[in-house]
Length: 123
Image (cartoon, rainbow, N blue to C red):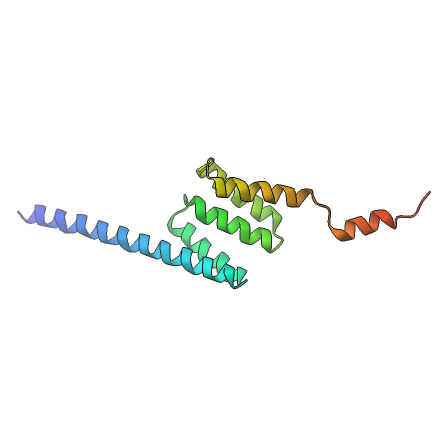
């Protein structure tokens, strides 16, 4: 009888831990979203990295990090996060749309690059 009770307590503890973990994930995601809306990108990145510490398979957290890194001009990091998000959820329309926009932004030349081209000395 003791072993059955211990087994039930252990199972209950695991369920409680899973519920707490899910709650923490949701809290971190929400705080990250709030921070991004306030243009507090470092805080948003910190929160979404915490989500990934708890759940490395969160496509949403990888996508959000990619957007944050892209906004901060951290292109390599953004690409890495988009790749992770797409591997985890390749049919997610929000992720694919964000990634397509990221690719388009990479193709657009910077204004200073255009100036260099137009003011380059002629042979």
